Length: 410
Image 1 (cartoon, rainbow, N blue to C red):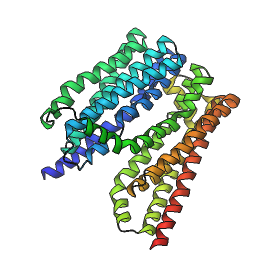
Image 2: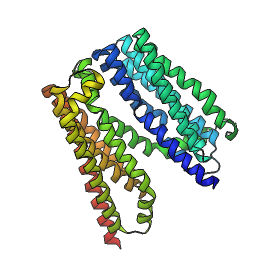
Image 3: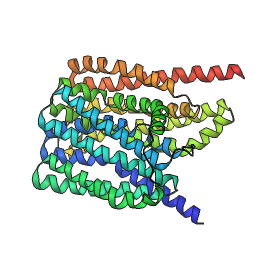
Image 4: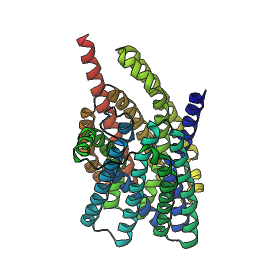
């Protein structure tokens, strides 16, 4: 009975915390756009996206890799040391990047503050892995919920009273530090056995997690590739407009992930039974569900997207409606790619996914550059759509090839 109650708590609180955490950037963007204006919002959304890319360096192989560890020689403390190590590299990489880019002091400060925010988040995530291993995922959900809720409140109050984005970001850093110390560390300190830093184990963790990191980094890059080119070619206000029309796409992507996660074990069982026919049937069903959600979203965006986004952000995006629809369509392509990627991971096909993302990443900057130069924000939206379509086609081609080769061996 206690195990069932824990399962319920884990599911409910993790869902709530993950949901709040997924949409925290949406609330920040609304606040900045409303209070500070469209130009500030452009700097803000770019800085947030760039920090997400650097976060992948700190996160590296991720919590799933930590939770599924079977090597008893590697302890919780080793994973925590490793996360500090990769997070410090993350900060160093961000500083080197900014030295080359030569942004204004104001823009550099906002980017670095978001990287610091991600540093704290990265360390906390390693502690979440320890809690998850101890079957206390509900405490992870509570932590994410508290951080999300109080970060939004603190950010809103500070920005409303000071009209200063830098102070507002500092407020959410303080919130995250307080919850990290008084909640996360409090819940995990009994589960961590302190030991000396082991370079060999740290190297082993880096080496074994490098493919996972590669896929995660390239994924984050291609999802935001148009934003990076907008930063080079256009103005801050146009960056903000793109950020606003791109935000609804995260809903489709989040929905697809929520659809895929509960059926992971079922798909794994089908794969273990070597039943490719049933696997393909399940993939088609899930893909059709994702497409249905996407089509409904596109129709709703076409009918009510402009007035709803104007109500939320206080800006008129009517001339970018086509861009909104193109990005939503692109998010459907990405969501199906994510589904196929999940199946390939179950088959332990990770290196090939780096190749797929590498090809897409090579196309992304050139395509984005050309389309944005010629068609502005609509060009950025077309770039996103085409990049996601290329990604999906590469996944489908490889998946069909791999499954066909497996059948021929039977």
